Image (cartoon, rainbow, N blue to C red; front, side, top):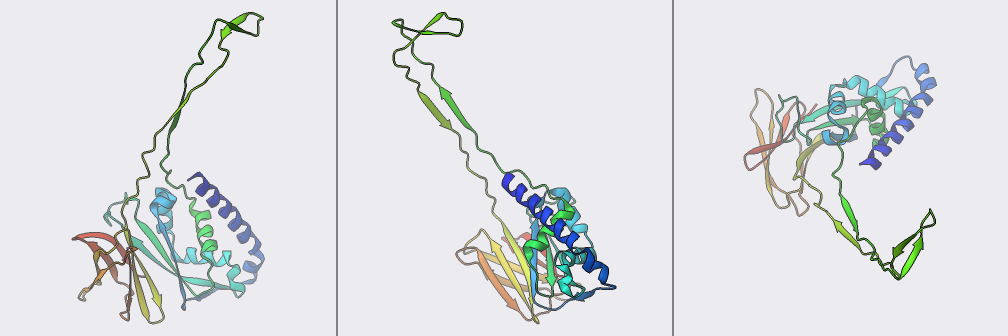
Length: 265
């Protein structure tokens, strides 16, 4: 995880440079036009990737501010434009009303207008929220060195000029006891929802190959829409629908338990 932290810091420095470099362009724009058309780029961040405080800052960031941050990082697309932003929240295995969200809770940014470099967009946002990822599990290695056998037939001078007994053949036995408990990898399942023209694409990403999931879309004063799908050998399934899901809360269920929830904005 140390290497990940170095990457984030480097990205933050890069984006700071980018933002500074577009100050002149920013000054020339009396107003900004919002790019709200397709295609849509999806940027999803999990709590464990950035830490609790940065995760909450990311979720609390108004879409207008996020739009300006990402637009500045892209030099306002050389046309005084900023992207349209949709923000969704996935509670993961936790409760929407619980402020202590689990590590698999997520925030999804749908970035409209095309021409988006997700690496630049992510680095620009991270420079603002100051992520502090959770540390990765560590492996402990212990080494035991056996004392050398000594013989009275030979001597070795010490620093003071006296002699100390040592062996003619100093054999050192090194015993390595490596403790490796492995890395704890939790099972996961998540929803990713994108708009493609007049249709929506619902993706199920999981660690459950061949598992049957239920996807349920709900909005007030209307009946729920339900899909029952089975993942492939990699735990993935894609749904293409012509239903307008804007404003819907779409949840993912497995064996009667809600695994993820995304609000489409």
